Length: 222
Image 1 (cartoon, rainbow, N blue to C red):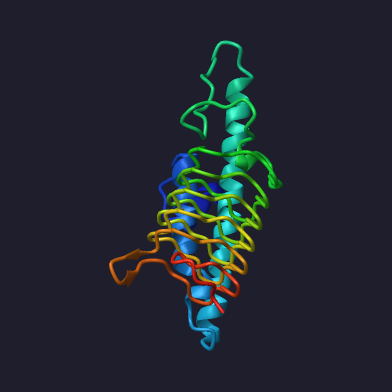
Image 2 (image 1 turned 90 degrees about the vertical axis):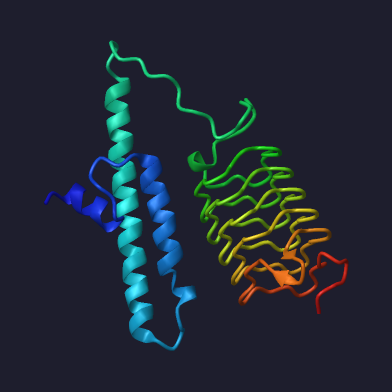
């Protein structure tokens, strides 16, 4: 088995899988193996999870690099012209930067953007305008959203493990199914945010810091 095939196997994929399939497989497996989801006192499982995450990161980066090189070769052939890749957004916006091209996106305008299913893990989106944006099923592990405007954003099933969301505006945001485990929500405004179905809480907040946050009912969390 070649080294490239081994990277596909690490992600439980068949050789030749698309970049989109690679990214999705990576997100799914990191979600399963993240150490924060395992008992802290089980050192064997913690070490296994850390080794697994390391292998997943390496496999994704190697396959991304391979895909990028393949695209560069194809684009260099004058007889083969490819159509531009589809935008991240439902309606093209010339003033937008694609998130995967730049880790520092602080203060950028992504209002009403379609960022569903994207991998924004580790990105700096502090004070960015994400109002009304579609972030459903988006992977945002350790993303920096401090002071960001997420009002009316759709965060359905978004993965926000260990995200920095201090002073973020989450007014009227849809948080149903979102995982905010370990997130820092100090001073965040969740007024009117959707987090329940009836009396059932449908947001994961294990280990989240909500000190000073304005809760959906307007009460300040102490």
